[in-house]
Image 1 (cartoon, rainbow, N blue to C red):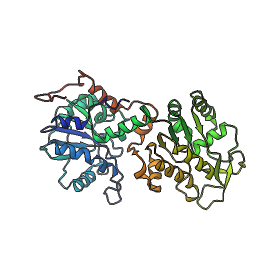
Image 2 (cartoon, helix red, strand yellow):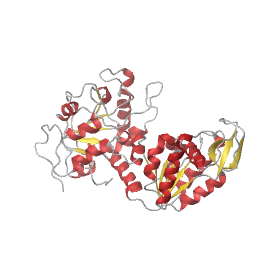
Image 3 (cartoon, one colour):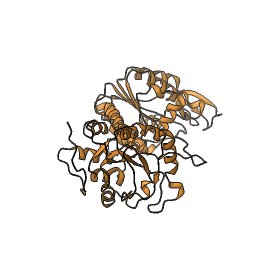
Image 4 (tube, rainbow, N blue to C red):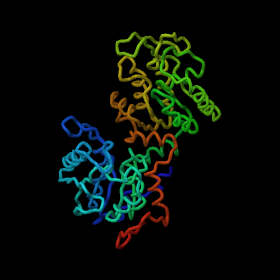
Length: 419
């Protein structure tokens, strides 16, 4: 994806296009809530602060919305409310941040330099269906649309897609821009060798990613239960390890595709096995051609970890998604720990994403050494699969010369000019 194919917020600000304008920001505030109703983890809110500050400093009147959970459209409950988000954002910004409940038609006041939170957008009928009529109603009072929700960019919903097509002007905020820049660096124009690490429990959940990466990477490293299926596809016994025998042919096709391009598949040569899935289980290190029927593979072995670190030391670009073992249990954490530390030590450009990957990064304290950590779960995975993200497609469409918005509505009295 060309990273210059969408309009950026900083370009609008540089051209004075936000001063005195009503700006609609779609954020990703789908955060976990604590037992007392507060915010348990505010990392997604904090990630949006630079874009918020940029809009307010530019003199915009800023309205922000997000989804939270899976509410029933037209029937929001207190549990679905963004009230806690608004209160937390108010504390972070050090200014009042009112919550607006009924906002589709813009029947509320917010002045230049002020910010409001619009109630859970998934409570609006037509949000999930990407309703263009809902988008047209919102677009009547919006002057600039800003997308800062990479985590949901893979969803075709009204405030992510249809509204971007209907608003007078649509751009990517700094968070979304940074995500696309990082992914573009990692996959569109990577420094070579390009190494991808894909871990996790099942090939079936990552098959599209593996097939896509097989056409791009120089080295594909697989771990976790995914590696077990590949090991079995090579004819090795894997004991009672988690695997998907019916996907052995798919695993072989991935390996063949890599080989046809002169690329390689990396599999562990030694593994940590146990007699059961437990922290106090009996464990041993075995070569993959010497497993017994009762063995359960739960991590890569020390020789494989050392080999993996050597491969990553020479990488130009590293893409990481998924752990190599059951790192949550200490006896089976060494492989993923070694992987995290090797990526952190590598001079190659590194990008990581996915929920389990972020948990591993936090567990092993290497966050500061990873060049880019993606905030998007599903969007990150779909990007790796090579899919177009609907929210980004809309922004790209609006950036084309002479593009026209859908359901055009009265907008700027004088359209801003861009250099």
